[in-house]
Length: 159
Image 1 (spheres, rainbow, N blue to C red):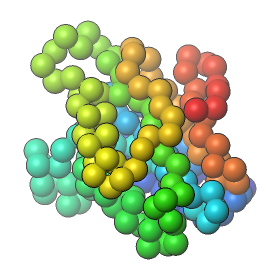
Image 2 (tube, rainbow, N blue to C red):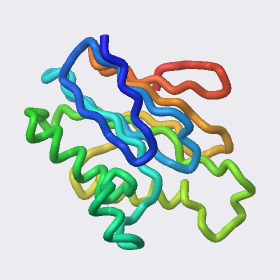
Image 3 (cartoon, helix red, strand yellow):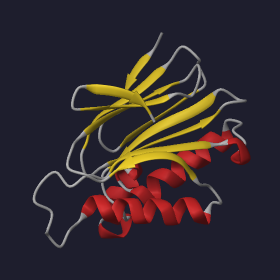
């Protein structure tokens, strides 16, 4: 069994039913699992910021840092490896406000808005999500079944 830890601004794609993909500390960042149950092919990404236009050079080096470039890359890789867009199951966690977020930044909120727009543009809907709030989350994708779990304050459940 392969256990792959996806760090901030990273993504992992798998077609091995033995793999578990996991990402920790989703605060204002967004974790997205995308899974094709028929192809047993999926991936998990941990995006930090909504739009790559704030730092195009960094986006070129680390596209998964940003929702717009990271999700686009993830979808392209999944489709290139044989996923069928009509079968994709998309689950989302994160986008919290861990600090007093009366601030003008509201990164978590902006991450979700950009993610929804990008998915809509690609004719994909979010199947399940837990976003917002004030707690960090751990997200895991189990490749054998496509089950996505969240762990929040010590409690783990299926998304």
